[in-house]
Amino acid sequence: MTEDKIDELTDNISKRIIENGFAYIVTTKLLGSKTLRMCTINANTTEDDILQTIKLLNTIAISEANKLILQLNC
Image 1 (tube, rainbow, N blue to C red):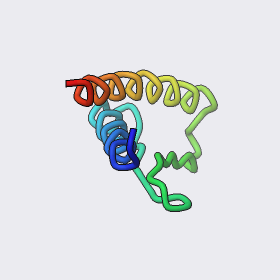
Image 2 (cartoon, one colour; image 1 turned 45 degrees about the vertical axis):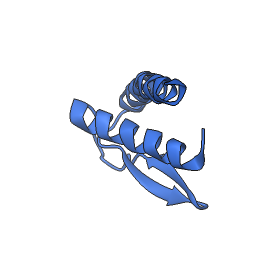
Image 3 (tube, rainbow, N blue to C red; image 1 turned 90 degrees about the vertical axis):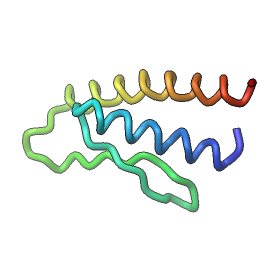
Image 4 (tube, helix red, strand yellow; image 1 turned 60 degrees about the vertical axis):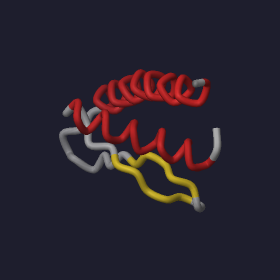
């Protein structure tokens, strides 16, 4: 994927997890690349919360990547 498509994928992942309501994961620039950012300073956040968030991010990422791949192949 091009850098623009990777940025689009990152944006889509962020939007989907926010829409889901499970976690508020936003994008930011790190060393010039768009990336996802998780803030875990809430005193009520548990290790399990973080693990569940990562699992959900993975599921969403696979789904969104497959959508983009299908678009590229059409």
